Length: 221
Length: 282
Image (cartoon, rainbow over all chains, first blue to last red; front, side, top):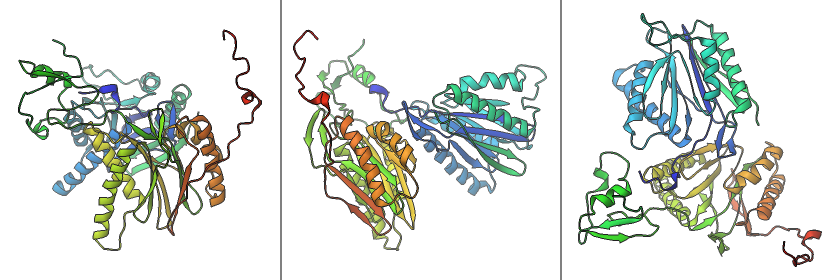
């Protein structure tokens, strides 16, 4: 790839987190859009509602992020026209993986987390890298503050190892309120030390009754 | 065998090669691989500083004639934009009457910083867009949100083809009472806010706007606030010149002011007698 100086990518910062519960899923992302050491805007959503029970949060390069969200939304619309139903979360997860790998040699510089309810109405979280490798997990974090957040989630959620036999369920036994509180705590902590995380955090909770949205203020420095 | 980056091999006679659109993936061939692939008995042509592919096409690698910051903000009746009128050629101030703010259709204003020729190309794209919109003759017209989205797509797609339009654009407008102000960068980064700025304006003007912008600024107050930002940019941005245009757009229409200059103050004691203390090893 002719990268003369790497002008074609930039990291617009930000962090996103998702936690899966027994019958809910919490997805959160901060709303700061940065470039270098500047802040472009404090009010930019990195979350996209792809389907009724499926929400994507990403961080990375904002141009690619928006293009990817549009791409998936368009594909979902076609799916709805062809199959007369919404895509399930696992189906959307596969679609996202394929879409990312399609651009394997000029990647979407986005680090995505897909969250929602699977076909059994259980919470599910899928975590991705920039070129489409994905895995269903109990919780995940991506972005500039991820390194500060994942250890805390590991400690608090005590997710069992995926290598155990028989397989133990990765979803957390925490209640919805406790999970939302944990997410708020974790973002407040990441804001203290990560310069690209802050301003506001947008928290979406998906459960059987639909999607609920909450905005929490964070430090603006 | 490592071929230096800026050497290309050119087949002696035939230049028309496989249509790049037929290539399976969207990325162009790495330049070094192209050179090695044809290095058997063909001429090596040294091409300095421009990416000429086999088809003879070129793409932008860096900007030549550039404009500096554009600042914009919403105020009570609409949106107001300001930019200076300089076109710099590196460190030379080559053009001093470049209009960097233009109106687009009935509802939008576009200000651009960066490569001026790419701005002119964008204006041609938008001309065509507005023309086709008018030709529908259905009473509908493209508002600022639509134009902003169109520009975002154009910038992003050009970046995907490795041939960017080297601009940062500010798009402001009013339609049906709704004020809109957004920015698009050269690789497709875009956002919407109450006040925006490009380039140096981001570092120098945005902090002032964050501290002093209010929802209900009158036009006079908005101009004063904008001039405060422009003055700071004039003092501290070396590519800024003292010749500005302020453009406003409201539901009624567009007004782009005549060029004018701001009063600057240089009477500090440290500036008197500048060659005092010139002698000496320091």
